[in-house]
Amino acid sequence: MNEIKYWVGFSLIPGIGRARISRLAGYFSSMEQAWHANAAELEAAGLDTKSIQSVLSHRPTLSLDDEMNKLDQYKVKAITITSEAYPSMLKEIYDPPPLLYVRGSFAPQDEWALSVVGTRYPTYYGREVTEQIAGALAGNRITIISGLAKGIDSIAHKAALDARGRTIAVLGCGVDVIYPPE
Image 1: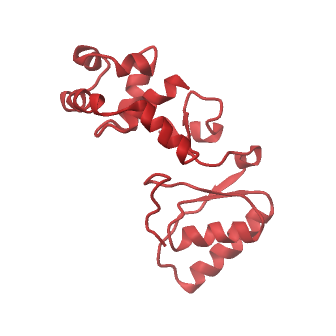
Image 2: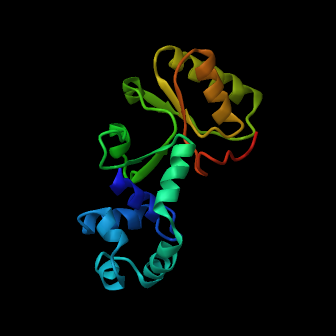
Image 3: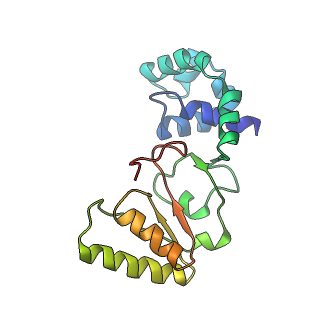
């Protein structure tokens, strides 16, 4: 649990995204060690000057314990790519995210999943086909994954729920913000 707060801390620093977090995790023996590293150590880990300055200026402004309390408040778990809880199929993609924020839980049947992505303004035909395909798959124990946005995404989620199947929403803006609001 203690190590996770440092992964979360780095994810909150502007300019320290997926690639730089992965670089830090690969260089240091722990993310806690990376969190307390000085400029020279961060440079040795492969961070550029702008990223180092961002870490050094933002690190003192973040209360990692407060951030972890906020996650608890929203019932969110942070899962690192090194965790057994991290979805095994996601680890196999070209460039997997090093940290996931999860509200709810993954289930064994989520290994069989289909991601549905589409326009926010679907045609009548697009709506019908999405409902049919996502509903049929969800009814046959295939988890439907989408972005929870209006349009095709929300149609796929609703079709999965109507079929009493599982659905997972992937949010790009955090669990405390739903965008767009509808």
